[in-house]
Length: 466
Ligand code: PHE
Image (cartoon, rainbow, N blue to C red; front, side, top):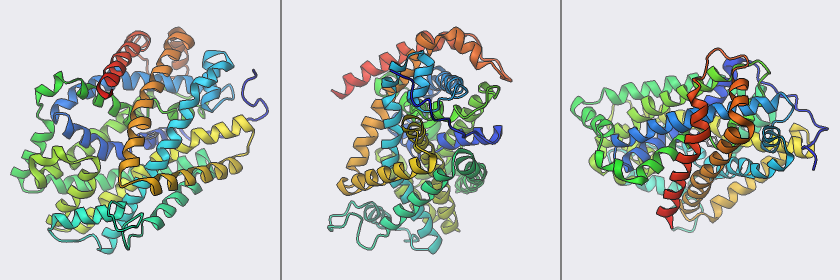
């Protein structure tokens, strides 16, 4: 056994500290924040969801995030950027690379369906822009429109009749491809540096508009989101959903952060950068996602929001709300354009781990590897689209890959960090160049609490799904 590709040295590096933080935040902030988070909260006891959610953030999310940043940079400065390389370096044995297979598979498979939803967002933004989505105050019209867009009609078309989804998928794909082709700094970093501030502006506009709707409606909506239903806390499902959401949202346990942080320099801060990226994600999720999607949907739908799936909230409920507000067309456009930006900064990060693998494993040059990967990803996307009966394939993949496998990978990473890489080395490595100290107990949490907590969740998870 030899270490992967000694003959290839990646020249990629981040351009600036703020750039890498924005790129990681861009990966984290995505559809998970604006659609998945409110959807999960609505289905799991409204405000009660937030307690297990914040516990998972503190016990699993932030510690594992630091572990990933630390191992990623450690291995990156030694010349290894792909998951097989990072795992081999962290474990000091090339055999460990076999454990990393999920860190390549998960982001690639998620990309294949994530990009489809990303294209829905682009199509909705465009159709608000042109006015096609101003269907009046007729909620059935929006449902029909959505069903047609995503191909849930049975008229024999993959997408509904007259839908231009195929075009939007190709455009979305092309934008992703160009940015990835340009590279980590020139493509991903440059784009995130402009997209994230723009997202904040768009989201704040929509937030202000939603919160200035008639006040008794707003407070009822906020009450649903923020008042705990304590019964939900005794249901293990709530705890599963909360930790799953933390992983999905922070991009932890995906193999993404170990890859991004491997392009850092020896003395770049990982502690403060990791914490900043997590905080930005939580700001978008709790303050923006939590205050827009669910309250707005509640205003229109009342307590039946709980029965709306993740996509129903964003793509059905909100257009109804926009229809009722003055200048709804503008806010509809801002909302879906913002979702599109959030999605694209995430999907970019799903391709880079695999590119790094092609570069290192096969000594392929970036332009060759990104073209090759582009072809695989496009084929996969079409596979998902054509064989999907409505949202079925999407849901199946999201469950098995986007939830189940993430737990497995997070567990593997926690054990590698705590027991093989070692918390003594981890603590020392994390603080090289750091502007902030990680409290020592976090290392103990990583070594003992995380594996036990994850193990317990995993058992409950299997138990519930068998
Ligand atoms: N964190 C992203 C979101 O919240 C999703 C994502 C998954 C990003 C996998 C990167 C890798 O939408």
